[in-house]
Image (cartoon, rainbow, N blue to C red):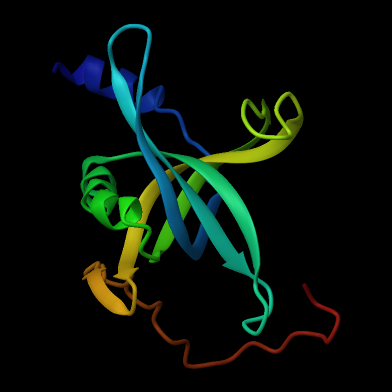
Length: 159
């Protein structure tokens, strides 16, 4: 690339604001979705836990799996999910959106329900039953800022 092309590419680089959701939840409904142009992508459902540990609440996320590592790990869980084993995982989601879908089966067929959709971008760990079957290696932490020799004093109502 020429110097001019490099400086133009750097000047037009787009920045993004990221909204990520970190949590843990149960994996289900792993499926490969085929698109109209014969492509495909991997989807699944994560029922995330939140609230009291004595009686947790669940939030359902219908996710599209993003990236090779996450896709490979979800595919490795297919057998356990098909055998209805409890698969619990630590996850990071992005691109959260709300949507509405229509039930097609059962006594509530034709009714609409809300759903949260997101992209699954990272899996921290996976447990099948009580067995830890995967744990991601920790990434190197960012270097700490040098400690200041003098602590600044601020008024009590400072932001």
